[in-house]
Length: 185
Image 1 (cartoon, helix red, strand yellow):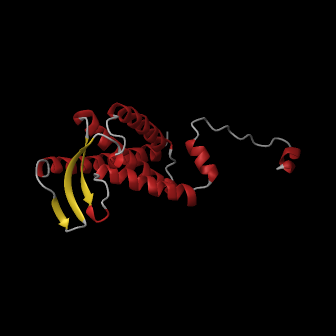
Image 2 (image 1 turned 30 degrees about the horizontal axis):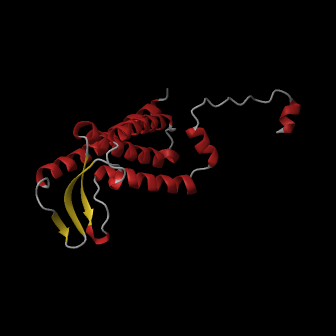
Image 3 (image 1 turned 45 degrees about the vertical axis):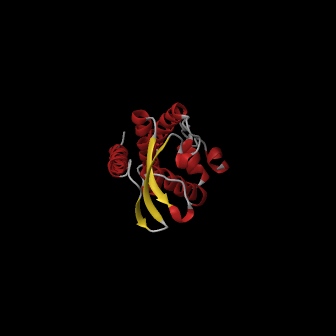
């Protein structure tokens, strides 16, 4: 195993841990300062912190399916860790490394809440457009998915993605042995 690949993976896991910690810290703050209190208005009519408990997924969809979300999140987390491990340690793949790290941190942040509270703490409310209340982990996941789609559509080549997302070992290409094989190429 190449040292660069291990280093890249460790850095991704440390980054994920830091993002996870920030999410946990923000939710702990919301539990202490917002739970049972009125909202804290940051920008009147536009942005406020308003505590709520969400038993659904992002933005309050599909309420009450906690066990299903736990199973799906664990599967997603395993896939993301495998993808982070498989990513080549090349600068070209740094955006995917960051994106997968963000999505993993967000998924694990909300998984923690579901496992230990049976709900997810949400508290950021954009009143201006009456957007559903969300949290820092939701920002990681949503932003990560949006940026991922951009990169998949406009940056990475199909061959790169096929190699990355295929979990089968790539067949080694054999070198041409005869001059006739060389001419055919």
